[in-house]
Amino acid sequence: MRLTTLVILLFTALCAFAQEQSLRIGILRDRNIRSVLAMSQRGVCTVFADGERKGEIQVNDGLRLDLNGRQLVGKSLHLTVTAKERIELVPRSASSGLRLRLPESKMAERSYPGTLTIAVEGSELRLTNTVPIEAYTAGVVQAEAGKEHRQEYYKLQAVSCRTYALSNVRKHAPDGFELCDAVHCQVYHGACKQDSIRMAVEATAGMVMVDADIKLIHALFHSNCGGETVNAEDLWSKREPYLRSTVDAYCGTEPHATWQRTFSRKEWLGYLEKRFGVRTTDRKQLEPLLNYEPTCRDIFLGNTMHRIPLKHVREDLKLKSTFFTVTTKGDQVVLNGRGFGHGVGLCQEGAMHMARVGKSYTEILRHYYTDVHLVDVNSLDFFRDEDPSTGSAGPKR
Image (cartoon, rainbow, N blue to C red; front, side):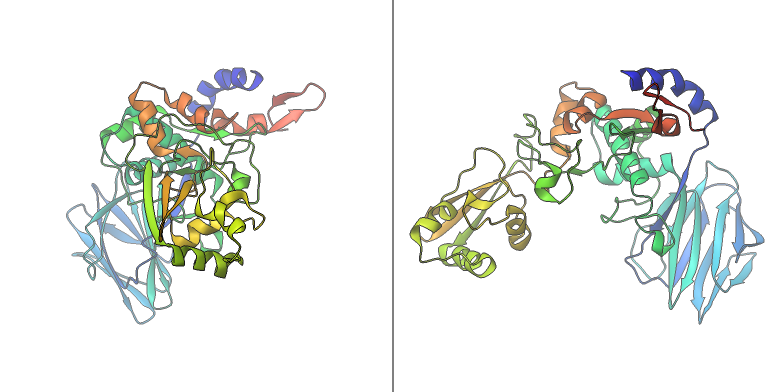
C-alpha cells in the first residue's frame, strides 16, 4: 500500500522531467556484412566519420558504405567519406529514422528509429542502432506479439518487453552494445508500423515491473503453459519470489495447448538407459517410466529413484514442454503433452485469452507474476533506499 500511494503521488511529476533513455542494439549480428545502404526516413541526416562531422545526406539520397580493405568508404550522390573505425548516421529530427538495405542480401528493407553506427570489425561491418527505449519497445512488441491482438495484450507485452530490456542492459556489454535483435535477447526488426501497438506503448510509457525489493524483475514468458506455470527453481537453480507456479485456466483451448510424440519402445528405453542409466531389465523400475500420468507439473519423470529431470528429457528429445504423460501401447510409447515452452512466467496464449474476455493488462500481469508492483522507471531511485528508522521509502541522499 505504501508503495502504491507513493507511485501515484510521484508519477505525474517525475514523468514531466524525465528524459527518455536510449539503448544500443546490436542489429543483424548473425550476418556477414560487407556492404550497407542507408537512407534517411525523412529530412536531413548528418554523417560522422570516426567522431568528426563530414556532411549530410538528404531524404532523396542514400549513403552506400563498403568495406575496402581495412577502411570504411561511404558514398552518396553528393558526399564521399572514409573512416578507419566507424561511420555514424544521425537524423536531424528526433522523430525521424533510417531505412536500411543490405545490397548483398535478399533481406527486405527495414526502417530503424534513432541513429545507426556502422563499425569495422575485422573483415566485416557491425551495425548498432541507438534507439529511444519506447521506440525499441514498440518494435519488439511488433516482432514478438504479431498482429490482431487486443489493446490490453499489447499493453502487457509493452510492460514486459520494457522490463526485460532494462533488467538485461549488460547482457552484451563485452560486445560494445547492450542488447541484440535476436531471440537471445528480444526479437527486434526495427520501427513499429502498427498504430495499435504504438498506442499501447504510449499508454504504458515508462511502466516496468519490480519485486518487493524494488528491483526490476526478469519478465520471462513462453508460448503456452499447458494449464500450469512453473516455479523458476524447478527449471533453473535460482528461486525468484515473483516467478511462482500458478494455475492457468485460459490457455487450454489455444493453438499450442497440446502436442504428441511417438517413439518405439526400443527407442524410449534405449534413451533412458543410455542417458540416465535406467536398468531396462527391471520391470518394477520401468513401469512408471512406461506409464506416467502426472496430476500436476512434476520435476522428475515418473518420480522414481533415478530422478530423471524432465527438463533434460525435453532438451534431449526436443519436446515442446516438460508437461506430458507417457502411455505404452504394444511396441509404441506415446507422449501426450501440454503447452509449449519453458513454462516460467507469463503464458502468452493464456494472456491473449484473458485480454479477449476483458481482463485488464494489470490484472493479467499480476496473475502470472506474483506480488509485483508496476511503477514508472523514472521513479525507481525514489523507492530503492528506505529509511531504517521509519521503514518508509524515500529519495536517495
